[in-house]
Image (cartoon, rainbow, N blue to C red):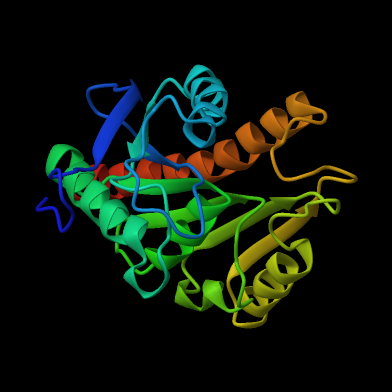
Length: 228
């Protein structure tokens, strides 16, 4: 991917698990800043915070490929929407490697906003959004009725608005999207309070999406066998 910034910064994919023929791919999208053109690095807390989630998902779902996207820059950057181009690049890379395998997007904070922005990609089956940054409350308008959305948000979040993420979830559900919003109680933005509960519910949400994809995959295989 070509760079539009000095230093030729490029996005990168960091694979947690890569079975040879995955049933689905889980693309992990970490958070960031409202505005920053500083390089994103794997050592930064926004990325480090999601690595345990990626490992937990991989452990529970050995037939899923699990990969985290490292953005070029730390920030959303207004109209530039910097991580969106990176996520589209990642989806193209996944398609090149695994064909039409379905993708589950797991995004925290800015990663949740990025996930919603690329929901129009044909590979995307589901979004699991953790404390998503949806400042307009309309970010989910990109989802189609064939897709699935699960949102986890703590009511004590002072960085992103649980009210607006609920509004966006209800808005999606009203259009016929399979959309659910789950309160994480008096939790803040960084998923530190009762972190094991965040992990367990996240793995369950990704697991439910994975099970739907696996079931559809099995049905397709059965139909092909019946045609022979």
